[in-house]
Length: 414
Picture (tube, rainbow, N blue to C red):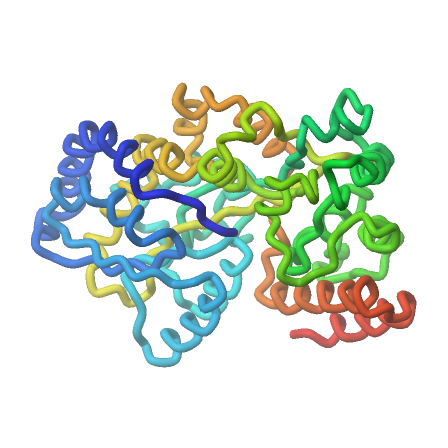
């Protein structure tokens, strides 16, 4: 998941937050451990470091804790984890994308927060959506992380180009989606009808769910050799076969959407923040809708969590910071600054959040959203799926032979 933010927006949002944080943070510090004043909490985050530092500034002022923010690019998270676990090092608090959470847990990088929940009620799973409950994330009920931002996938579309194509409503089904892509691509304003990111490993899985299937069999093992997965693959590849999506690997989804070259894209709410910041002239010319459905309209429940690093040197300070980050006021401020959806349920119903007309669509889609399989080897599986589909779509590889090789490869991943 990417992060789109501007420091000016963050600073404005935090002006209101500071008024409540000065009351909230001292209470947390006192309840937890008064000795945290003067200590340092090291945080690894994939967010914009300047904006995140602004976000925690009221916490620092109220508690006397210094928060040392280190930015970790999403592409370097895996190597950073491996090195930290091998060396016995690591931060006090780390942001973890949901797709990588099983890997972090399997590596023993995150501490179980269960013993601390009585003193830190803001970290309890009841504050967050069912999809990211402790049971769904861990399987055994242990609380190895706290939801930070929620994310789901919805369909962004250019309303002006939709109208130019003679359509009066966004696609609600797969059939309508395919037809709309063809009709929009035929307009003078567009070059393509849709954009498929060649790095978007979850997209084929979402299509599989929408086809009524799953990628995990009854035995708990990965199983791609199903009619639903094959149907998803056919749907995915059809856009390439008809020339409805760009094939350049360096295609920029935001630029393509803004220019109108690719007037539909499946993305997360963070794209809305980018559009508002970078293309205010498009106001009223784009909108979002829930995922077009086949047997279902299920989307990915993505986002990221925050976890306490196993072996942290400042557990009390880290827990106080986690409680602060999980608080509704903090998460509303982060939404104002970045457009990222709050994971906290109370924050999600805050008038500041719900005033955004797109939030109703996000909220509706979150009711039909699923996590990727919570198994440590899933990243390898997803990479193999994407590599295989790109070979077929971009290199002309034989579909059946490539899929057979994919199934064999996946069966051997441990």
